[in-house]
Image (cartoon, rainbow, N blue to C red; front, side, top):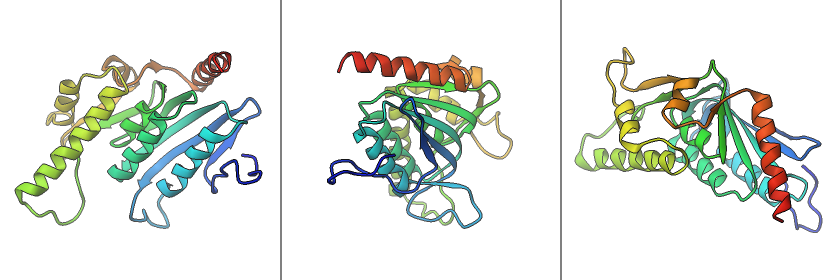
Amino acid sequence: MTEANNNEETTAPEQESITTESGIHALIIAGQIEGHFSAGAQAKSTRYEQCIPTLVAVEESENIGGLLLLINTIGGDVEAGLAIAELIAGMKKPTVSIVLGGGHSIGVPLAVSAKKSFIVPSATMTLHPVRINGLVIGVPQTYSYFEKMQNRIVDFIVRNSRADGEELRKLMCRTDELTTDIGTVLEGSEAVEKGIIDCVGGLGDAVAALKQMMRKNEKHQ
């Protein structure tokens, strides 16, 4: 990332990312997505207060032609993850995501937020309802909040992929897939079959697709 000149270009804070000579900015979404609370000193995490300025800087930089998201997350804060996903989905520059080890929970919206998505054959994605740790007050308002949050997540996935909303809800609420919880674990090819991810492929495939999008984008400028 280049330094700002006369305050015209935004400079991102320190973040696990790099810009290549070809103008591709690679951003890692790894570990737990942090929101308003820290994940702890020993936990690998992605902080939204660092990730958001980085995305703004990428969108504004004249030296960056496209964004490559490298995703390997267990999930985390729903509000923070959805906020990051909405920013990525609203970018004008070409964006490509690739799910590596896993794109679980709120990692699903993050994976589909890019204009084109890939998943390696060995990666998995977990779909499950919104849940919370700690004390939950069992009143109708609490359940209504969870339902609204779940609808926001499903609607975002449907808007940014080929997935069917009703099928997503069924997969999230399955009780025969996980022994101690409800939900569904999808392998790479299954995620593509369900329309969540566009293609099964590796890093070379994702980079090639992003470069092609970048070339098309340059022709229209």
